[in-house]
Amino acid sequence: MAALGWLTPRRRSATARSVLAGEAAAEAARKSSLLTDESLLPTEAEEPAFPVTGDDRAAAFFDLDNTVMQGAAIFHFGRGLYKRKFFQRRELTRFAWQQAWFRLAGVEDPEHMQDARDSALSIVKGHRVSELMSIGEEIYDEYMADRIWPGTRALAQAHLDAGQKVWLVTAAPVETATIIARRLGLTGALGTVAESVDGVYTGRLVGEPLHGPAKAEAVRALAAAEGLDLERCAAYSDSHNDIPMLSLVGHPYAINPDTKLRKHARALDWRLRDYRTGRKAAKVGIPAAAGVGALAGGTAAAVAMHRRRR
Image (cartoon, rainbow, N blue to C red; front, side, top):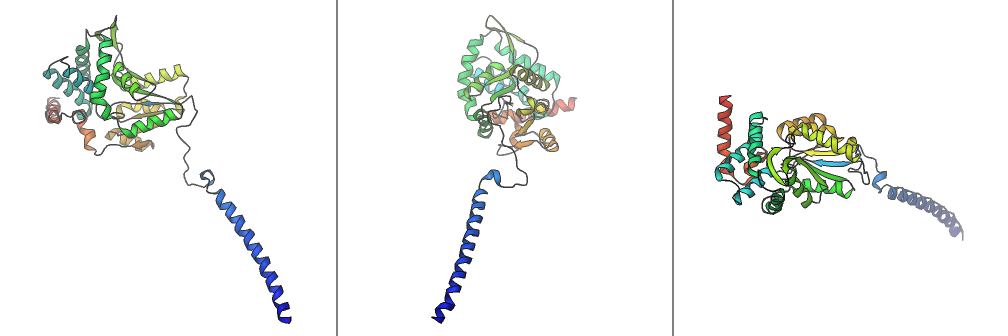
């Protein structure tokens, strides 16, 4: 009995310590389970969710060429028209050279811009708008559908899923841009408007091509009409020509950026995304994306000759 008496206090004492340990463990477990909620976990640089679900004063604006789609929409459209004998091979080569100039030369030469504009307008002059829209649907399936960047498409879908409107903003004809926007399930498109009378193209523009600063003005006007807060909106582009548009919104993104935009974006701490498998594609630009690599060499030589003349 003496031995039992000696053991009993130890057992009680051990039980008390066990209870204390158990309670402490339970409390620690409760706290640790609460911390599994990501909203309670401390982070060094926690970033708020974007896009913000339900923010109806926010929208997203996407450049088209080399941002949403590989290559230039106007060139793919031109290939489709050439296939349908709207113009001759000589005109296709000239048209491709004009479109490639902006990427290869890295400058916006007013003479070349005017020449490219006149060439495109001469192709559609006298044709009905409805005819070009119908053909545009076919051309999208033939040349454009498989050139959409999946990464950029996912970004656009994130805005749509958040309940926001998503617009294409491009120098391409508004009819072509509208077809692409509809096929991708986007809200709509801002594009260059060609004049038509009684449903027939006149060969003239309404104003100027939607390029550079004109894009920013279009976005500003649409935002005012839609009651959007540009500081809550996002814009996406690959080109330094779109810096005015990107600077207009609170959430600018550089997508597959050219050298100048990449440098500008890094300086201002803008977000960057690059979905290309190689940087070379950005320099080759339209001819490579369109599958006419033979044209690239001749175009580069023409650029060099032009520079020497200047």
